[in-house]
Image (cartoon, rainbow, N blue to C red):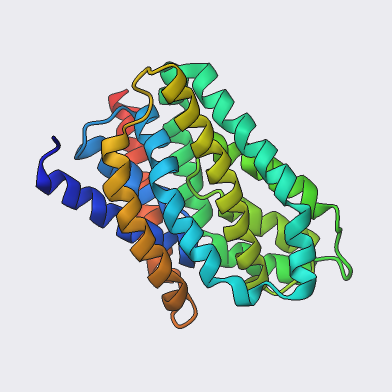
Length: 259
């Protein structure tokens, strides 16, 4: 059995990560280092456990954003279902196929780049508002979710930031509606990636997924995901973005130095 204080830290990490995912994206950057530092998981196992453990919180956030999904936006949402699912499966397969050694080399850079993307999100949004085409490109609802979901299935941290950036450039929709599409994309992507990890671990156990750590992470993420939507509607996400960016850069540099 895992010590109670460890489970408590993991629960709190899920709580904060679920809130950050609902408000701005990038919650994996908060849960990932806790699983490494507190639960002593390898980077690869921490990543797969984050994907499985944070999924319930993303589902809760998707339900919270349902009212933002207007009739027209739901058509865009339906277009992205299949590409998001296929991209998530492909990304999960790449992670398990390439193995822990490749992941350990790549993850510090993914963390730092993701953290920087979170930090500059407001600047990106303002630039997009000036350069976005008048009618946009409807094909973006297929191409962007597929590409972002490959990245998300491989490493889910801050996948919503490139999603918002690309969709904001290609579709003339308010950022609030794009945020609802972002969380839906994350739910589909994480769901298929999590199911892939669980199925492969059940069929051929390799220790690539820690179910014991995933449980408190999931419980915390549900509470955080439900509350984060309500907080996101009332408060700016600047503080949450700042915390996620700082933690992501710090752990990325640490992993790069100690690898």
